[in-house]
Image (cartoon, rainbow, N blue to C red):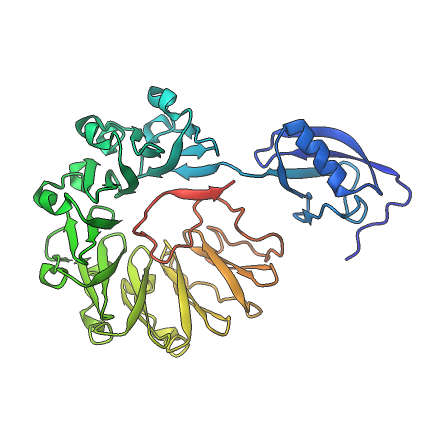
Length: 444
């Protein structure tokens, strides 16, 4: 539709705000035949920062070469300015940490979930390279390889017992629900936090002294993949519902480890898959053992189920059936041609096929089936997820949504900007509890 004609109005008054709602310009007068670039320069001058883009009140990205009239801006409109090099936001369950491009960190939220970082404020003024978190504590890795933590001591907010080991050389931090594991440059691992959630690695200490390549986690346990292709795991649950680590199958040849909340799956170089952990959460793959004996290219997961893509693009699923472990209803559609799979934490999968179509299954956590994938969705460029809904960006930039209608999905489909400027807790990693687990919620 064409924007309303503004011939009778030579000027319009506009206001400009940041995504946070903070005012930048209030009632600035702009000629209707002036360019958006002029407005952008005024915003940059007021902020002293480069502006990546301006967005109209109707969600349209404003091109700098457009006139104010052609952009459809009207008297009293509020325009949102997106500053380039935005800070990255991380979260625990009830607090946030914002890392600026200069490495400084600001936190807010509930004190008992990491919202209060006053005890380490001086250490967070600069040079933070990355932030990691578990349920209630944060761990920041600085450019010198040291680690700074805050939040409740019992879940990893206090590194006193391992402070010397974390004074330098740390390249990444991983987490369970209430514990952390730091991987150092020399391939050694340091753990701290709640012993019931994996901080006590004493039983495997000698295996973690060197040669660790990456770490994967469940809610309670860690699994370290070593350069040798072996896997070392600790703190797995025991009991009649648990399958213990098949150590004899994990001594060599493993190329990737993936996890649900309570189970692990290891992909070996020969294309076979080995699983262990809680049987209901995917630890037991005996029903599909023959299909997982060879030819597996990759494994994806949500909170309670796994999905493996084999050579040729067929898909094998196992785990909690209501969470996508049972793909019987769509088996014919995923018997070939699948290239990649996305998942929601709440228990649904979406497979992108070579022809650009999408097939979705699972999602019965809320006692209703996932809503059907929009028929007009083709040529998918990227998919993002909330706890129980999907948002797909097409090659033409349109966004389509499906899934549970309350947590994330709305009744009408958006055709606005790509979903990368997104609401908290949107994920698009292959393995939901990825080997590089973090609670990063994007650029806001």
